[in-house]
Length: 598
Image (cartoon, rainbow, N blue to C red; front, side, top):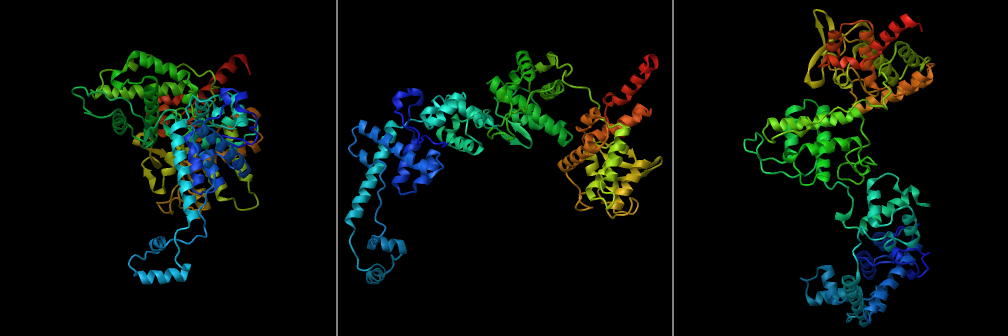
């Protein structure tokens, strides 16, 4: 199915179909005919200006464009209408004039006798201009002038409100119309949202859909295209920054005359202590500013009221479809939108908390007078869809997983990837490190304290702590170092990373590589285990962070003091320990069964 404006199957007169499928003339049609008049290859011109990919379709499209433009010329009384669409070629065998010969070869400083001698040698006797070639050149110029005149008189600029039938071939236009894409604007909005928008169109696959998208972009002016729906933004680091009004600065502001975007950057620089925090702050305030720009045009942070805060809270509970991306794209690209789906109650509460924290900071800086989010409830309730799953691996399940890696290659030396997974399971279960903490740790971070051997960890919030290097952790580390050919932790190079690439025992790995490796291997181990199906279903979701939760759960299950658990894991608040609920659930089941039995 061609994606251009015309089709070989369009044989029924337009008048029989009504205005919805009436063909229209746009600037791209005249650009196509001018390119043909200049002698460019027809197939290339059809591909560039008409969205036609195939040669036989280009022939039909050419005839239909020519017929339509000639008809327009005749209606205007143009006597040269027959020139439209003709290929007028100046003879390629005609010899150049003496003047052209001199100009082409840069012979201006030669004498007339020298030039004449060379010209005669290469081209024969000097001849005057070819009368036929001159006449053809005059006709070609008339043809191009006529096309420019007609374009200014009859060409229509495609508009988002135009029916698709005016610009696409009728067969394709009818498919688009039946699928609900009646106008160019409706088609453009759906295409720009991304995803497999073409699934409802019979006989249109990904390749044809891409040609439709490309042709649509030639039809609509850039300002009319949804590229993206939210307009052009810019990125500062990882933050989307959009333009919102900046009213006159308040007297006494500690920030001075700065834009709203600059206040976000200053707040993040002042309050965020890690890359993860900076990313969250930038994302949440960036989303709020996008909402503010499009849902409250003209309103600046200084002008926010309680109604705005309530409206944003309601917006987060039910995000409109056009605010949700249908493809992974960077801000400003086709298909981008600030959200990837509806938010959970926890995510909504986080969004409100972050935006409120930014406004609180602006109030403290005397840059805005008040924070209206202080006057509304930020509680979002429980997530009814959440299953209350504990992100920890039971002792039985851990033995099953370790057993898989012990059996993975029983008759040969385990691969570095398998050795690394054994280490990860045993070491993180015994140490409870965050993934970022493990990735940045080296043997040089091991220290001897009066209480024993420990690992100095540079943790979240730029805080240092010491984690006990217990027996299980020591054994797991020494086994892993030996497998890498590095000896043990007492003799190996202090610069040795605790976790290494499978290709180079001294090279660290990235977080994405660690995450994907753990997920892939755990899925294989769980699938091969004899665990109950309900436990398998839960463990299929396991990731690196589950091993940290497992450490906390083990400590609480064995009766460790809460302050020891808190300091070992590097939590700022003891309230965080409540997430390790397997221990409390175990005690709950135990106490209830004492009374009622199992």
